[in-house]
Length: 210
Image (cartoon, rainbow, N blue to C red; front, side, top):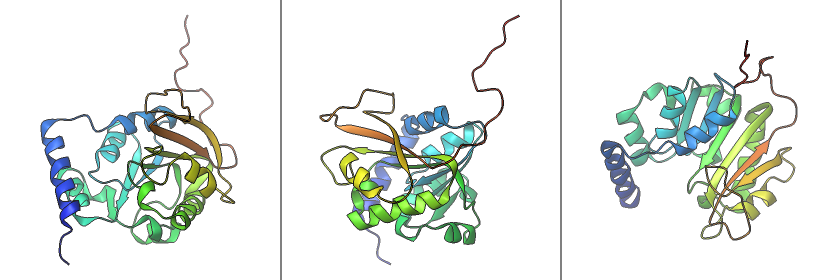
C-alpha cells in the first residue's frame, strides 16, 4: 500500500521530537494522577506511543492502538511492540482486542489529540458505546482535544455519549486542571462508567504521622 505523505510527514516530525527529548507525556501524567496504582489503560490513537510509554514507566499496564502504520512505526521503533497494536477506533471491541492479545477490559481509556476530530458523528457515538463496553465499573474515559477548530469537541462528545451509560464527571481546559469555559481552546473531558471502581482501602497520598 502506498504510504500516506501527510502521515509520513507527521511521523517524521514526531520522530524528531522524540530524538530532541520534547516532553510528550503531559497526558500520561494527567491519567496517572487519576488512575489507581497498577491500572490497566488503553490509549486510542496512541500515535508515537509516548503516552503508553509514560504510563508504563509509572507502573501501569498500558496499551495503545492506532490505525496509521506510518505513525505507529515511530512507536514501534522506540518502544516495546508488545504494548502496541494496529487498529482503527471504528473496529474497536472487547472481542477484537482479545483477539489481538491485549486486555479486553480497562480501568481508564484515553483518546487524545486529533482522534475525535477524525470521527464522524456516528463514529464518535460508536466509540463512546465501545469504550463503555471496555471500561470496568467506575472506569474513566478521558477525551482531550480542541474545543472549537475541529469536530469532536465537547458539544459533539456530549451528544455522542447518548445511551452509552457514561456520564460526564468533569471538564478542564488543559492537562493541568485549568477551568473550562465556553471560549476555552482546548478541553479535557472525563466520563465515568456506572458502578464503583475497586480501590485499595487506603487512598493514595495518605500519610500516617506518628
